Length: 222
Figure 1 (cartoon, rainbow, N blue to C red):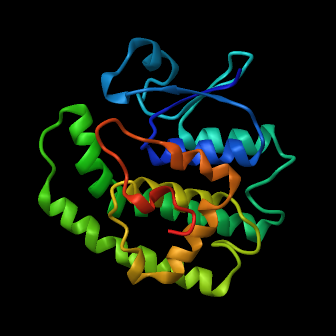
Figure 2 (figure 1 turned 180 degrees about the vertical axis):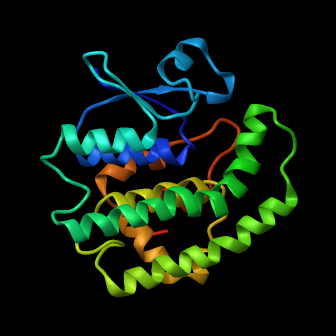
């Protein structure tokens, strides 16, 4: 059985989980706490980061970018990248936006400070970082709304990697209840559409012991 080593609140783990489901690839989940730096896990990925995909034949694919590229190359029947060069360029640009810019300016400052610091015993959350993340998210939600006002999905007419990358980050933050949805109805509508996809619903069943999500978290209609 194909196995994904993941952490349920890692946005990159969520990104790969949704992609596997969109491509209709069966997989088992194996919880990994990367801060424990397990020897067996470090041998699979010396960077010590989730996710890591292990194929049924034992092939190990580490690094979320490498996994996403592998899934496109190995299982092209369902493409999430687009059918022409211009489309693929725009998808890759937006994936970079959410994987790098959004993560650094929002997710790391909220999920990183509030949850992963706590899990890994790295100290108390940094209040100034949290305030910055709560301020920065408005700019990104405005940008999602701007894109949705002009396109069917973020990168164009087809659902794909850009939408998955955005929703993976948003869902991790939404678990904390830190997304100001009411201030950004277009972004809220986009996320509701993603939440309604069968590939995304297993993400909404994730529950961290002792830390339940807000009531709207798994509600497809908010």
